[in-house]
Length: 352
Image (tube, rainbow, N blue to C red):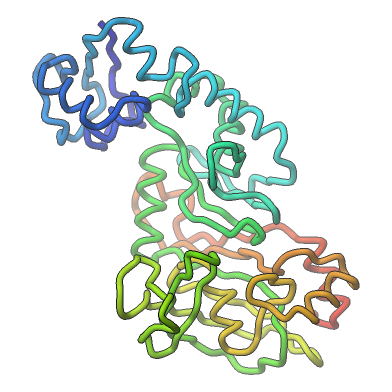
C-alpha cells in the first residue's frame, strides 16, 4: 500500500484531477475502476472522484509496488513527477538561454521570455519556458521534486514562439488559481510594444472576428464575422461566426514610414495582435506570416531582425484581497529593456 497526505498545493482540486497528475500514466477508466473497487480510497473510504481535497486528506493506493511505479512514473516512465521529467526540467534550466525572472513571491513568478523559445511544448521532444520554470524552482528548492507528482507549477498565459516579454506563472495552486481568475475576468491588463508599417497618429479600438486556418496555421480577421472563406472556422471550431476579438492601440511615436505602438490585448486569441494590425493595413515589421516581405527583408538586412518585433511589455493588476495575489495587488510590472528593440527604434527614428 502507498499513501499520500494532501498538502497546500494539492488542496482545493477534485480528487480525480489530482489522481491524473499523481498517476500520469494511468487512464481515466482505470482510475475510476480503482475508486469503485476501493483500490484507491480517500480517508479510508470509497470515493467517487468528484470530492474536493483539503489539506490533511489521506489518499491510499492498494496496488503492487510494480503497478504503482508504472503508473506514477517512478520506474522512469514519462510524467511530470518521473525521473525523466526531472531530467527534462533541469536540462531546460541549463540550456534555454536569456530567460529572466522579473517578479517572484511565494505564489507567483513573472518571467521575461526571449524570442525563439516556446511558452509550452508543441510536441514531446520540445523544451519550453514551462520546463525552464520548473527547473528554476527545483534549483531553488530541491524538495519540490517530491510534490511534482501531485502538482505541477505552470505558465498561465502564452506568447507565440517569436514574441518576447512577460509571461505569468503560478508556483502554487493558489497562485495558479489567482492568475487564471485575473485572466478570465480581465482584472489584469496586458500591454505590448511593437513597430508597425505606416503612419498611425490616433489611438483606436479594433473589433472583429477571428478564424483559424488549421492547414496553414494562420488566422484571419473579418470585421463582420460571417467567415473569410470556405476554409475559415472559428478558433473554437464552431461553424458560422468566428471568435470575437478586441485590440486597442495607442501611437507612441510616428516616423516617416513606421509607428511605435502600445497595444492592449483586450481579448487574448492566437496571433490576434499580428493578424488584426495586418488586416488594417499596418503589419508588424519582421512578421513572416502576416507581414510585408519587402519591408521584412529590409529590416533583416538593416537590423538582423528575423522575427516579428512584438514584446509583451507591461502588465497591470487590479487591487485584490486574495492571499495569493497580495504581492501583485495594484502593481504594474514592466519587462526589462530589449537591446534589439531599442536599436531598431533608434534606427527608424522612433523615440518613446
